[in-house]
Each structure stands twice: as structure tokens, then as C-alpha cells.
Length: 177
Image 1: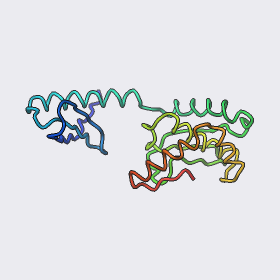
Image 2: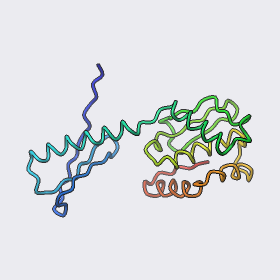
Image 3: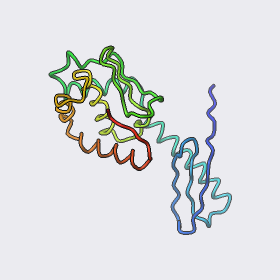
Image 4: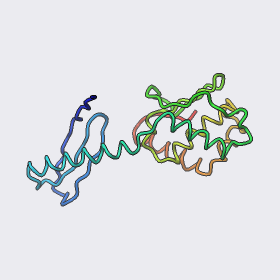
């Protein structure tokens, strides 16, 4: 039976916070925000409760390589149906070693890799990144033909703006090139 390690928890008390409790992940650490007036017992209770909520949320949104491949097939059928003969990836998978890109594609062997950094982003952003990489199977460069294919996805510009905002807010220099 695999045992999961309990994350490092940082509790931040706030005098301005009255009733609400919230929690979020900051790397490997979980930050729990609580009202300053909470007793140690209430703090312990709420930390446990918030860890359970985070775990449940992460379990719901855990995305697999199989799900990513199925999503790629749906996107191809919907937006690139006239290029199906070219846009059939050999593999589509999540990777943790992409620090400068949201996704990448090797047209020669049909492999697509999507950065784990976008796993918790909205579906329409994941769809954009995936469609961007699928379009590279048909058109390897970023020429006008390529961008015309990507523009078939109605939320392309919105997703690009979202990713640019994430890059700016986090200080990460990530591109969709």
C-alpha cells in the first residue's frame, strides 16, 4: 500500500479575515489562510479540512496521457478534419521537463508533449495548446498557413492572452513557439 506524504503546511493568520478560510498550493507547500482569532484547535481542524478539499480537487482534475490523446482526437475531428491524414499524433503526453514552452511537437515522428504546468488551467486553454501542437503536424513552421489552422479554434486569441498573462504574472518566460 502506497503511503502519501503529508505536505508542508504554512498557516497564515489575518486580523482582517473574519470567517473565511482558504488554501492553495505554492510549489510543494500548502498555504492555509485563517482568521487570527481562531484557536489552535480550530486551526488544526481547518488545516485538515482544507488539505482534504485540496486533495479532492486535485483528484478530480488529475489529467492522464490517455485523456490527453482522446482530447487531441476530438480537437482534430472538430477543427482539423480536412487534415486528418497529417494530424494523427503517434503519442500525446504530459511532461514535467518543459520549462520554456507550454507544449512541443516533433512532426517527424508525430510526438506531442504538453507541459504539466497547464494541467490545472481551464479546458479551453489546454485545448488551445493542444490544437497549436496538432497544427504543427500539418504545418511545422509558424507561417500564415499554420496560424490559419490555429485560428479555427474560436478561443485562440483568448487562450493566448491567458497564457501571456500567466507568464507575466509568474515571471516565467514560456512561449507557444
